[in-house]
Length: 167
Image (cartoon, rainbow, N blue to C red; front, top):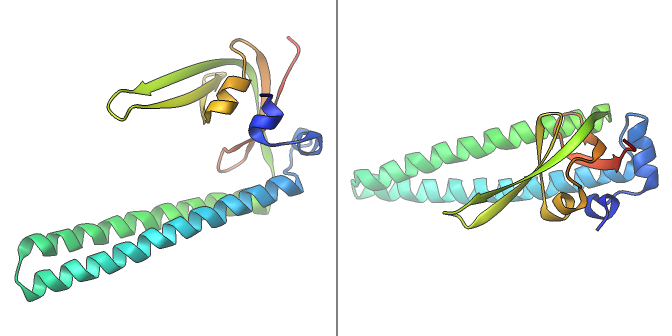
């Protein structure tokens, strides 16, 4: 799989990124990712509010401290989710309003980190000491010790496109 296939970009996206801006299709992809994340976050918050309310009410009615503590814990969990949602929104707004792209050039090295307990793998590509977490197809599309130019969204640091440079 090539970098273009793995990152889902075409030559017009790459041309816009070389000029330091997002293409229309990349803006649309960022928008879709934002809406998907927003839907998941709102679902978590709605569930958390309902669950916290139920636990707090039952804990109060039955005078059970444990249930009240569970309700309070769920309330703090909801606050954390709302905070993450706000942070994600600010990054999304920064990426889409400004529309600028940052460029990272250098020699790539790939690192696979295994979590034995979770039985999962995390894929990283390092360029000039900056680690970028990627999915497996993107990881496999990069070659170790190859010289690359990677284009990322300015605020979210999401990888938009990449090209191998002649060394």
